[in-house]
Length: 196
Image (cartoon, rainbow, N blue to C red; front, side, top):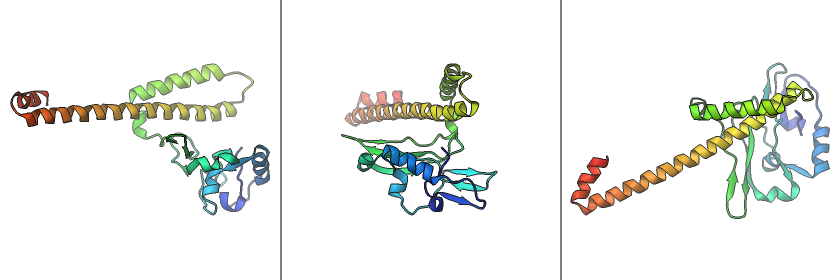
């Protein structure tokens, strides 16, 4: 929508641009939505997008929820930009038995990981093969692609992190086992030296 909810808090501009906070407010009111970040940061000025041509910083990215769900969120925050020209907005949802948190931003080292790059290339190809139709504008296609590929990237990053954590836990268990055998003495010492 590229709209701000509050001109005084959500825009910092040296030029006067189009302002439509009433349109965004109307949208929110129509669906009973609450801007979680603003709810938790009522007087804070923080921006998620900078327009070079307009010399303007704005908070254009939101995390909306139904009014009744506000209490289920512990926090809402802005993340670094990653691969988009907008900062990401995320929050921690308190579930029935555990909290769910939005994954962190994409770090440049992910792009040097061949496995990650191959998965993103595959997802991008699939996206454009399925969505390159004449009835969709290039702008809509691109903006949607950024959101979709960001979600896929975060999914892959989260899976890789879980795998690394499991590997680390297995290594720690193996080390503990070897230490215990070493403490018992005898051939365990030879086994430990051999395995190390």
